[in-house]
Amino acid sequence: MRQRIRVAVIGGGQNVEHDVSRASAASARAALDPAKYEAVAFTIGRDGVWCDGDGRAFGVSPAGSLAGAMQALSTCDIVLPLLHGPLGEDGAIAALCELAGLPYVGSPPRAGALAMDKWATKLLAEALGVRTAPGTLVTSADEVAFERPVVVKPVAAGSSFGVRLVRSEAELRPAILAALEHDDRALVEHLVIGREIDIAVLDDPQGGPRTGPPLEIIVHNGLFDTVAKYSGGAKFVVPAPLSDHESALLTTAALRVYRALGCRGVARVDFFLTESGPILNEVNTMPGMTEASQLPKIFAAAGLSYPDLLDHLLQAATRIVST
Ligand SMILES: Nc1ncnc2c1ncn2[C@@H]1O[C@H](COP(=O)(O)OP(=O)(O)O)[C@@H](O)[C@H]1O
Ligand SMILES: [Mg+2]
Image 1 (cartoon, rainbow, N blue to C red):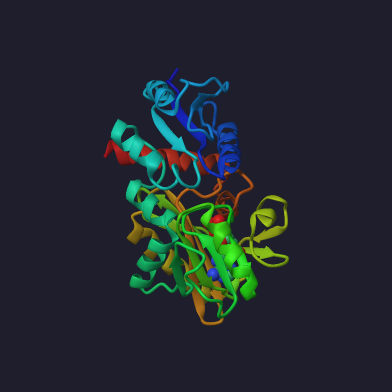
Image 2: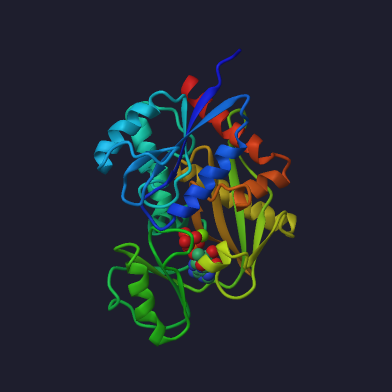
């Protein structure tokens, strides 16, 4: 019998998206075709200590456990890092794999780091001619005065943690302080009025990156915040009802940003569609990957089931190494 491919599925991580990542990892492990793949679970604790699939720590400290985890990772054929947020999606885990010479799914360190930084992404997108919300970078709550409704958010976080809509002067300072709890830099952005549309990009080793059908997020009131994300307060519509022209503008912008950042494997590029066209919100190089998350839903609607999507990602990453 042909040997199964050992896939190290890494979840958890040292940030507020720890549980979201564990859900992505558990969902992926359950969906990998057992005839072809052997899923080997790794979890990074909130404290940085790596554990195996039975919850046993590889060591007592982050460094000690990492040494043990590397030993175990070296018995795997490929790494599937399903980590969101800082010290994972920001290129850290890709860098570890690069240093260790382990094939891995997803973007290389630079793309992860740039996309995790909403300020850097904004500068890069604007330079490419892809519009973003006008915004200011702040490192203290004393730096800005209230002039109009804004959205305040940490430069690098996720799952809407630390993101607040500010409609009055009194709300501004608390919002900046809340964002600065997640990062030492915050973004104060003009409130964009528009539909929220996500474009998923998937690398096709033969034909280069391609996009899935646009997905619209319908939020019943206000922002697509943490509560709406994880308590069923939002609805996804895929394909989003858009004109061919609107779809073309969004997919062209998504691919332009994906390529310029140097993303690999997969990414979800999130936009607002306004009366004057698309405005880029952010790029996720490792978006939510449970079967019910936006990106798997997008490709399922295009005929690529969740197990086949994972298979596609693993195959594509293996091919990068073997060429
Ligand atoms: N400038 C903005 N204008 C309007 N809504 C915004 C703006 N920035 C963020 N939002 C809302 O807040 C949500 C979370 O913000 P986002 O930047 O995507 O952070 P995260 O990385 O945590 O997902 C978005 O999905 C959107 O609903
Ligand atoms: Mg977002």
